[in-house]
Length: 487
Image (cartoon, rainbow, N blue to C red; front, side, top):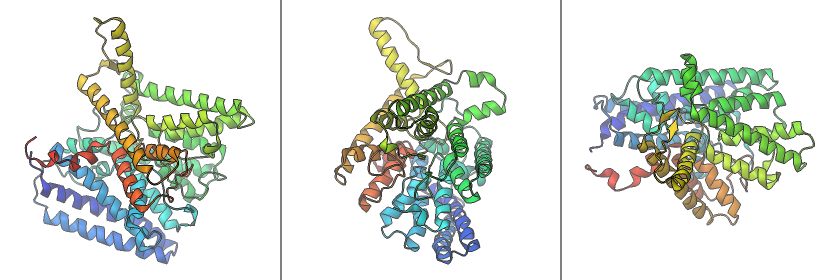
């Protein structure tokens, strides 16, 4: 199977042009607020990205309009890497970071909606950079290629394979891959949720700047902090309730929102993943709140529910915001948060990690194995949404889950060379692969990774990209077999 490099180069040109245009947002804010040092830091990479993007687009404007699945895998990995490199340049030009690997980590963390940082005192950064970090995660939340497909003219005839290579989760509803109007509708829903949340946070008493940046982080399931103390002493119970609500709704599959728009109640009622997702959220909230109250971590049940519930939702949706220092909580609550980070939100949503649908399918397969052990001749069909699940999807879920945990174990092993704390190595790897950012260990509730070596930052960037792109788009182009013409 031949790789169409000219078509890939043309699309990368479009994408770099879009990235350069995105950098104009913090550039204009820096100019408006007289942050003279930040103006040059954003002007140079914006001009560079626009120039390179325009050159590629014009040079390969006559490239073919067909793309294969192999092309899309390579294009996906190259897109995220190139965009992250451009996004890292402002930190280096401004002198905020001196290591290219650390700057790349900061950029990848934003675009993959991980929310981790290498900065010790985040609040000391110029506001234009705080805006760029949050805006970048908002862009990454919906998916770089989905945004490009929405805003630019059609690049490929076979756009389904392009978006499918980037989409997260097991998409049993096939909503992403049929027509361009679908991605436009997704983007409209995404913008609408962000704007509505920003208005509600503003009404709760937060400043406009805080409201916008927190809305970016919540809608994208990113959790990128813009204050040194995170959410501590910043939000009110009402604001936390708004954020928790939008964290939950942001990680509901877009298929559900399409069903709501079409008033298709049957699709919503039989949605297996939605029921499981809401059930897991409710159960986790109650269990963690009960543990915090019983252990007297908080004096009242209301406080236990407020802090425990917010953290449960934050980790389940892989957002990673923290309204309390959960590292001081009892072991049960900390373990629950770590496990929730592996679950993630629904498929075809902004959340990361394994996704609830995979957990559901694996649970059904385990239950079927017990049943067939007792009744060897029984034929037990696994169903999702009240429909039989194709064996190819079930096998894919098992393969992906095994690959995920093998990469997780390998990552934790590598991190032990840069930290003597096993808990830090374990939870940091989980935070990177699941795109949660925060964790139990040295990185703490703010997801700070400044203690690691720059080379470790590069490795952690690889884990974040692998988690965001569901491993295959990152791993396969590194294999020798990928580059063979015949497979």
